[in-house]
Length: 77
Image 1 (cartoon, rainbow, N blue to C red):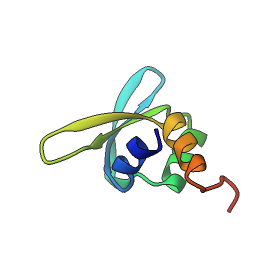
Image 2 (cartoon, helix red, strand yellow; image 1 turned 180 degrees about the vertical axis):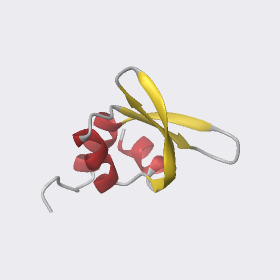
Image 3 (cartoon, one colour; image 1 turned 90 degrees about the horizontal axis):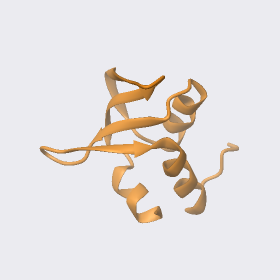
Image 4 (tube, rainbow, N blue to C red; image 1 turned 60 degrees about the vertical axis):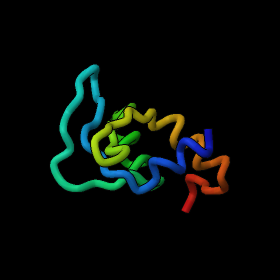
């Protein structure tokens, strides 16, 4: 899973999944460990990110953060 998480590091977040609804993200947000933590704190469970020129990918924030911790990042800064 760590490899899959690395592929979306820095990817542009297009939408967030909150309360069984996809909502667009207004400004240009890039997925990172800190952004994922802040989104989880607001109740976001998944994000849609730009995965290439013409594709999108849905990413579970829980899995993304778990993979980030395995790679050596901790939640305490």
